[in-house]
Length: 360
Image (cartoon, rainbow, N blue to C red):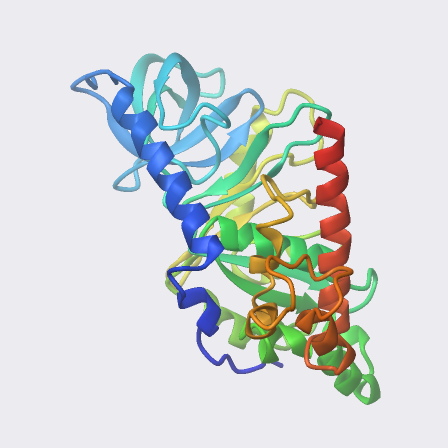
């Protein structure tokens, strides 16, 4: 059961938007750092490849051309555009093969260079330190996987993912698994509850069941020929969905598990080939998702349904929180803006302001 898409929301094409400007500034700063960095000449035997997963302290890299996976460490000096999260899954890297083999007979290499990322999904790293954690790089789409039941989806989390996707230039998709747990008499209510995502944001929303196969053909069409990151909370059946689409996860996981050194759970993302073209990137379930680098002035621009009303607010700029004559608040009260999306905005605004106060 899938909803049709209506194309890109007009707000995404506005070059003057805050979101577009912030991305341009970030890209320019990255390029400046790259130019200022002297870089090193690559050895003649260097190979280009893609990081497909981590394996304990190592990175598993598949060289271009489909050669055998190489178990890599990171060089003490890496030619990299950024300093945070130097290497992550999905990165295009250059490796230098080594003569020795691992204890399991796999070839060994050293990562010496990482190319600039075209897209990324990042979040604020867990812990007290304020730093960015890049979860995955260089994918086309972000499939936000949630469950219709057991556990029921969390709109606040969906909205956080949508902001992170926008920041990282990823096209978002919402995949609602376990639709088989929803009785036919309640499905119309479920669809209506999520209607704001396709009515206001023009996002693809696909209802699937990994158990019965319902909706999987529609999902395959969206995934075909693209690289798609699947992410969401634990318990939503993400792995079950992936296993119905491809069995390559077992092969990639087998390589990683050999080097986990006693670890029993997957703690890194994993690139998985789709049989009919394209790739999936599986990630472990995330208990929380804190958006990286978000401020109060920027936040409204990630709620694009506010845009038609915000220019009519009495005060400019307007926080859309308490100001008299706020056209956004009026639109919420009149049912023109989804009240739950507005609640997500208020909660994030409060979180951003509290974080700002702590840093003062």
